[in-house]
Length: 235
Image (cartoon, rainbow, N blue to C red; front, side):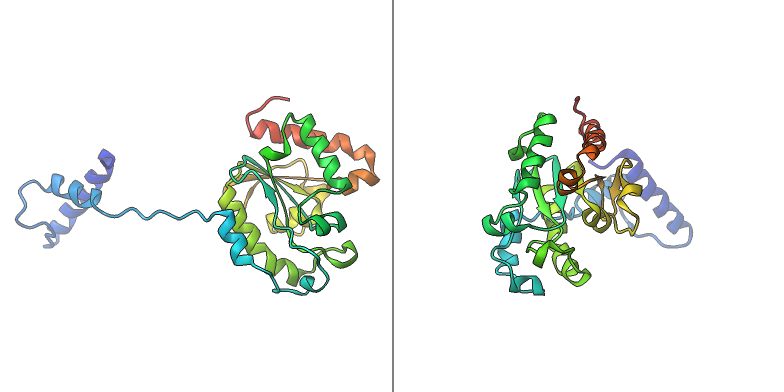
């Protein structure tokens, strides 16, 4: 049944139209019940949620940008298809390109340690990147490359429907949030994902940066505590 105020509001509109000589339910004795029957019989449109498998199938042997020329494997991302927590990095590195899995090199090992400190297993989260093929020499992805890959990531996010996304590094943070602000400006301030506002984005430093700058690990842990709070967990 529809809420009481819904059918009542519809009845008020019909009375207003009647006052102007328009009676859409002429001849019916109980117009309120007729309105409820009419509204409750209306089909409810639901949005079909894609599976990760169907998204991967459509991605295929992707040749949509120049990154396909030098890659060894597409790194689609992996993990729990219904994870509450998702991590998104910039792009695959050499180890990821070899194995076809996200965050399996030194940065991935450090990410695993961060997850362990959060009392979370890798299998519980979903891990992906802004682009799915390794940029040559681990350079930053170019805008045209991101443009081709981002729609697939967006579909993955909608499929997984996480509560929180951790954006690892400036490329991931700026791309997800659609901003040119620096990572130092963005981190420490969880923001809703612009195109899916029920999902909160927590920008933080990429594990590769932590390998070069160990002192920043303290800041990342502060960010992970915010993640746990958003998830309703305790440290």
